[in-house]
Image 1 (cartoon, helix red, strand yellow):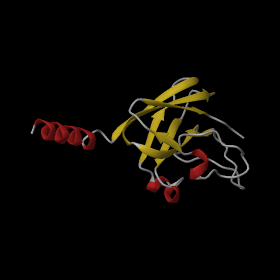
Image 2 (tube, helix red, strand yellow):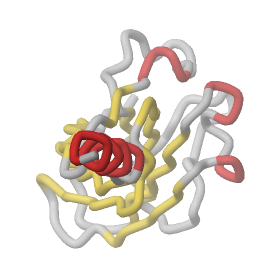
Image 3 (tube, helix red, strand yellow):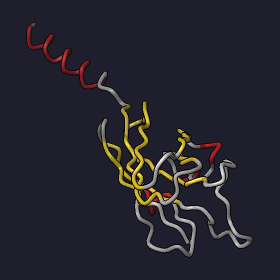
Image 4 (cartoon, one colour):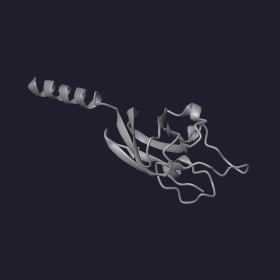
Length: 142
């Protein structure tokens, strides 16, 4: 009987373990202390880079150059991809040239291999395994 009770307790603990947690983004290479950092988090390839389908969108004011930390709460554990840009003029959009080249700094959860195409979900996905995980991201600009 004690064995059965102990097994049931372990089963309950395993399946009631938190499936969410916080993740901290460490954004490096901020060169201007103005505007906003906008973050989009995605958990499937079909929705990647579609702001309306992000599982989380967050913006924070940039007050200094160098490094900025953004904490995202209640993130589901699992595979995610993060896209971020530094909105220098505060218009809420990633400004681009007429041919689609970003005018503002941007970053992804993985370093992209080439600037010559928009990265795919598979290129930048990461595993969010435990609460408190830190994801370093380096802003880049064309």
